[in-house]
Image (tube, rainbow, N blue to C red):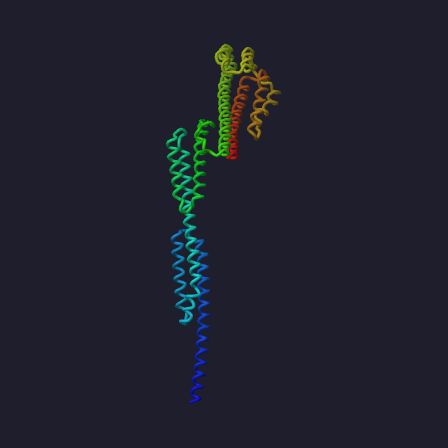
Length: 362
């Protein structure tokens, strides 16, 4: 009887040892499976951050991966103890991953909404830029639509950020409208339209308007001077043609009718004296040798070319009596063409300089 009892005790101890081993194996198996699932989910989340930008799909794909990885690991477990421990051990990590996925999804909603709002803002400002200055009704309508779009983004922007964006959009809209006024020469610093503009931005706009006004005045002066110079040059050519034809009466008539009106006093006096003198038949060869290279000399900078052309033209006036009318006409035509080209390049440079200044002011 005692032997049977001893055998029973021995079997019981063996069963306890086996149970302890099964439990330990289950814990080890569960820990290994849980670690593998966590690593899988962490790797998947890192890849998903790069590949998926749609907020709803991001969260959905993360949920599917959690279910798939968990189910695959659970099926691979060989003991009931391991399955029970696996569920308990993995639950906190799964909750963390779901919370992180929800946060990321919300962040993607904000990112996506912000990007759309930025585009909407840019589009509305472009529409405001197309509103003719003075059409205040259209300007206010577009401004209200812009403000409404920003207000609609409050759920994901938050009240503070929404307020900042509305204020910035209002300033941008006013600045865009002011630029339209500047471009059309209608900007008035005392206009009550700009009363809500921030002082610093208003000062930038005011300086920009001054710069544009100076540029416009310079362009006008240059264009007027060029037009007057063209009329004077054309009159001089007609006088020179008459001199070349030995028609002193016609040359004098041109000077009396158009020369007094279109030429500067010194140019009129120069040609009046020329018309009274008989033209030479042949060029002075020494003069041609020295003058020809200067007539055709070219400089890199338009301003240098213009200065040189004016200097040579002045020199030509003083020695023209030693040239035949044909040679003089050839030289003057070439110099006039050079002067026009240099003036056009200078005017283009003024435009580029103005753009650079406006960029600095902005």
